[in-house]
Length: 102
Image (cartoon, rainbow, N blue to C red):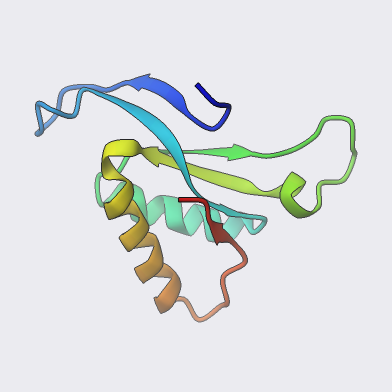
């Protein structure tokens, strides 16, 4: 298993198939506000997600990929999550600072 994928036991919900999934990287941005907005959109649509800051503890300042915040989503909801993020970014008045990882 890679660093960017983590096995997370699911909890039974409306979908009995949704009890075990992996978290996979979807999007990365250095812009904290952008990431928080996208996480809110995903969670509002019932998609479990986590954020992970990509930083190197040996450097006092994070820049470039070292300063990115990654959004990880359920692998079984990746397509839905990508569509929601694309839609949210297209409606935003600010240009997006990030990139899709999947």
